[in-house]
Image (cartoon, rainbow, N blue to C red; front, side):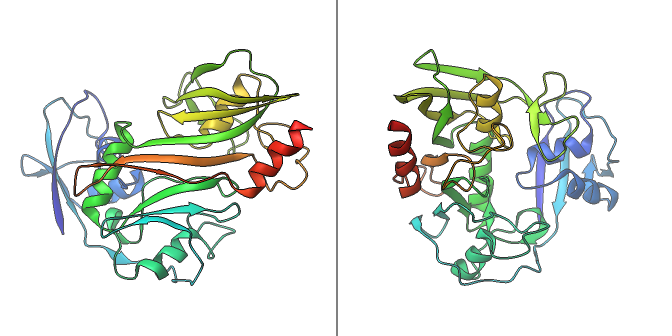
Length: 302
């Protein structure tokens, strides 16, 4: 078991929300279970999940030892861009789901990492699993990082929160953006009607910022680079659609007609930069545009 000492920095925040925000990888439901089990204390007394924090409160949370999950290792080929004892960075192909979910019980990146990494797994959130720090959509390709131990997981998750873990994408947007660069600063939340979609939600959404710049202009399309300041679900897709330039091939937020030869949106995670959790030195990685992306650029150039 591991005991964490967490100092509250907000007034009136529910204890379960505070834990989920401050303990990387801990979901709100998992935080509620810890509170219900008396594993979180304040001054030696158990804290209820609806307790409202005050700045300076020091909560002690006892995290359970990791337990194996029912996810089988599978020998799925991985394009490993970088790997050491702490982290592994993979160039994910289009079509590979990151984590098992309804409809995708196996054949995922996590299944592949379980096979590749063996016992080198992080155990954040009480589960023995590869430390998936961030995710990318099934039909998005490119760089994704996973932690191989708890220390690395916590360090990378902290970098994700303070924006020092930088992710740069390339995409093809529909239409011609007027400016050469810009920023979309608009909070994102669940769509009010379609719960499978995300939407701009200025009342209840979470802060989301995307910086974009033009890499190339084509008749009716724009090749753009997008740098994430935050990491909300479908962030680039929602943000560019919100300014009238959905991604080419995105049948969820753009045209319902798919682009010939594209499995989904034209989006590739091109670059990744992070501070190594053990050495403290910056690591910068890049992977080339996949063949399908280059083919799209040739198609729209015609």
